[in-house]
Image (cartoon, rainbow, N blue to C red; front, top):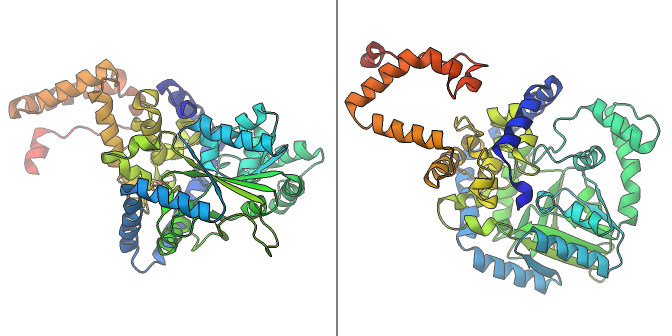
Length: 458
Ligand code: SF4
């Protein structure tokens, strides 16, 4: 899990770099705005969107509240379908399983479909260290692999890059000029990836959901690459986060409607695949072997207590597109995998607060993420709770702990409250120039604190 850790310094440095790059800011602004508008249009078509969100929340929490039983049943159902199952406690165990499987089967080339779980466990590095070639086949992920970088958004990994950037990368990869016109870029990607699909020995995917009643994995994509990665190679390995289960196909149908609408505004993604085992007699394609790796990697830490609602996340990306901090700081600031409000909550819980203490502060607490979340995760409240934990556990800097203690003391008596607000009004101009809020105030006009007469009128 250390891959995900983030020091306050790295967050600030990466965010500053993003803020100083007008092209990146433009790319983030236009892409997130487009996804945001599409989501609103998609949701407007639902007759009772609020009731569906409530239902989706119940569906997810029902599974999470009884996760042990659901995992046992899922494992049994997969076994009945002829799927090999591995429960991996951490990234090292999950990667070792995939590497060992590749070695035992004499594989050399691994074709990958987009999987945040595989990013999380650093699978590409593990495969390459073992002398295997791993190639991403999702277009955004492939572009990032050519360029050398991590996903910037959980739905649109190469969100910060322009068509010109991609044309440059493809020109270098093909050794012949590729224009920045979209049909030319698509044709170039097809040329480069077709050979990979046809010659890969192992296909690796994630799973959007695992269906307990049928022992299936569900994959949703818009590019069709997951179909080729799961149908052509001899072996298919799916990495499934332990919390990504749904009990029934009926529950899956509800979540699928919300996932696509929240991510891209589509009614459904172009391809929705349910895979329930390796190739059977009479099948025209499919792998000879199918393996499912069920990944814990810190998720168990969240299962009890108030943070367990975070396990309901269906990785739609809607909270990123509405977040004023993510839209400016960029995905890189949050770390290599999970970004935006969902990352700011999830990463500290998985790696430990002391290893990602900047992330709970990467929020204005405006609540837009909570309103956008299709499974009703109270993201901004969880961020506030994490900030409280930072103080309670003594992880927050001494000045911050002192400030909150002083604030609590001052505001617990009417006299001290009035005296402190009068002092704050007097000191406000100095505070904006020299105090801890100076970085915030350098790009904004700090509103004047309300005077006594104004408060009395209210
Ligand atoms: S937290 Fe909610 S809005 Fe954000 S990615 Fe997860 S499901 Fe989507």
